[in-house]
Amino acid sequence: MASASVDTRGIGQAGAGWGISLPLPVLLVLGALALGIGAGLPPEEVVRRFGQGFGRSLGDFALILLPSFLIAASLSHRALPSMGGAVRFVAPFASAGMICHITAYAALAPLAGAHRISMAMAAFAGFMLLVPAGPLIVGASLGIDDPSIYLLGLVLLVPVMLAGEAWLRLFPEPVAPPERREAGGDWAGFIPFGVLAALLVAGWLLPLHDVPVLGFLVQPKGALLMAGVAAWIGTPAPLRRECVDSAVRRTTGLMLLVGAAGAFGGMATFVVPVAQLLPQGEGGQLAGVLALFAAASTLKMLQGSSMATFAALGPLVAPVVAHLGLPPALAVYAICAGGFVAILPNDNYYWLVRRDALEGAPEKAVVARLTGAAVCQGLAALVSLIALWAVGVVG
Image 1 (cartoon, rainbow, N blue to C red):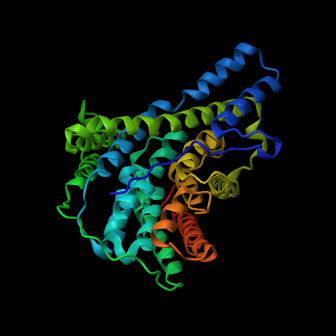
Image 2: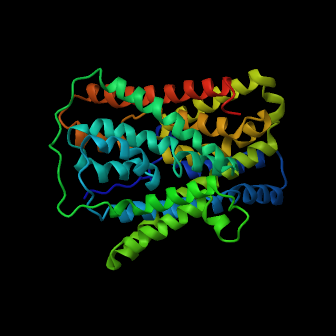
């Protein structure tokens, strides 16, 4: 079974025209230091502020990323059952559970046959909208810890998937390999997702949050940790260490990015009078939602990685969210909606889907399908979010 990972080594390289190429974490670190020094802060204050911002949300991200990448590594060694067209409905939840639409596509593509493009966009939507992927990552980066807001992702998933599918129906069905039936494939690979779902539902329905141990296990980070443990137990013993090492490697790079973004955001908040630059009232909140959507879209298009966009943007915009008093669900899902825009050639996902499901198709046709579907999904998410806010469902 194919496997995939998010390559963050080239993310955010800039300054190539000057003969300088630096990854985004380095640019953020240098930017944070430049802001502090440029504002005339004493050296010890620069170091103190940098340290505070860098470490602000690393603990949350460690609890989210490590078990998720462990689940993804474990699933890459399993043979899954054939699902036919139903794979489109499994893909969003598999993608969210692995916190990686790339790995989810690689795992499910052999089972999807002619439904690969639809499955790819469904996996993309799941990563953006469902716990423990996009919303939990963005919520952690914003310092939001309210499990109830994540139900909104299930509501938004329906119009988003319909929008992406409607766009794809405008094009002739691509020629795809026949569905492959894995010998010995079974549903055991989905046990970690069952553990995750069961614990989250128990946390929403039962008054367990004040019960020692159980209170931790039924909130999103605890449930995800137990799902990771279930994945590790279900992995053949000779492969367990390999899976753990893979999870650690993938987590480390993103943790550096999160810390650097937190340092830059913290320093910018301290030296820039944010409160004086932002609008007030409901009009200001709507402008804030649109600005969050635009910021996420811009960062995603520039660097190509959805995961890096979510990890980096939250710490940068957290002061704006706090000042405008945006409802937590509104802020989180405005950023998630912006992350849909767009699947471009600088995105690893573009090349994975292009080489697997659209091999031989002209580049223009590939961009039209994948980029167009992603933009439709993002706009559907934004419009649905604002509509739900207007009628009082969000807020």
